[in-house]
Image (cartoon, rainbow over all chains, first blue to last red; front, side):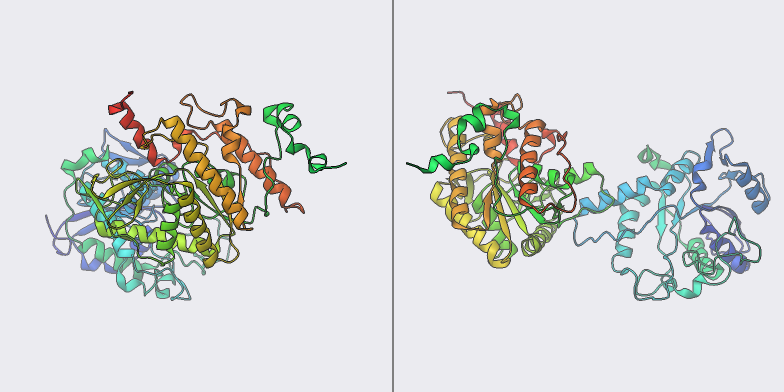
Length: 256
Length: 357
């Protein structure tokens, strides 16, 4: 398998997700020169548009049932707007689940923690999307969770104490055996608490406001949940350089 | 010439209070010693029947203390399987007064908790909560950590509760003669291995129960000088007896001892009251109609009748009227099968090998 860090590799990446895809697409504009062999198709929209996606088994693509979105995807990627995994080397799903729940593992047995996380996973829209992807391909899927909201009071957020432990449980118990993996938010983008640094919540970020009044800025100035291209570049570098995932081909039965 | 009976209320006379009444319209069975308001913080522990209290308190908008919350992702089914939201802390069933005392001594740090761990097929079980988690725990350390969470929760409950509701269930108990600890279940039934050299059956007599109940109540009050205690006796008959008596006779003896102990406790302490759930379900007035066909489990209608009486008494005592009007208690639809009753495992042994002598 070619290394994605290798600039001569011809690698195709499909990124599907909610509004946080925007940060990655902005970031890609900054760092694509470092990855000359990599092409990325971005399929992102506000909210849980995943629900409009249906698996076309005949053509082996995901299609949106929304004509507007179809057109948007066409324009963004210069194709027919369908999400085609046939030539993709990597699939990245962004957002769609509160991956970190703050389940205090000191209070619960491993059985309880696993049960809680599994249930949460099954109820997420990202999982629903994952099932649709799995109906078409057994290729590896990398989950990237929504960034921690930024705050002007960086010390007031929830403790990062159990964050990596919980992700580790999710990866080891549920995702890795299914050919998937969840990437932690890069450490340099948050501090001692689970809040993104304010520097990533400024400037251009998020999708345009649909009902923006004339003269208003493209984005809400006080939006602290969506991050900018600087953040997206860091995340995308991590995502592209992360090692190969375990194969999922023999493990499809676990998703039934 | 006068005498005390001339001035007694109607409820003091069987004929007007019982015989002449529609059984379902019998009222004023409980005259509470102290007010129970919706904002009163109430903790519930004890035998299986105690679970009805927590459910009814929640349903009627009362402040039931739950000091051990499940992860918020847990479904109701998961909560049930893992014994969350059953009692105010995950102690499992506490059937006897002595077992309550043991839990309280451990929780308040008066004595060190037992470090005994039961092992089976590579899993680890808590001898004092043998069915608290399906398939036990991953390691002995995890089991101890989990029990410590419960002990901390119980300690916090004792400190903050306004009313501690305890439902006494059994007098037959099992002790470890070496360590002196009491188990909620006979070792070897739910988990663990029975060792006749160290596992001793104790049929608690009246003196023993009264002494342990007094100690438990005194300890509660020592930790929280404002706490009040509401005792009840489970109306549910024994699943099985190791006394050598017929289970029907043993049930009567057991419930009589428990009931007598509550009388002593109520007389001894002005902050202790008794709620007559035992009488309501077992009275001949109701002709056994509040029991399921197995003549042991209480019907949802029986539970609803008991709890309606509880809320009627609580509301009447809480005058002036509380801020919100209590709705009539709807019949509880919860199936009795949904209750956590560790001792029901014993029923299996009747089917496997019970002798009919």
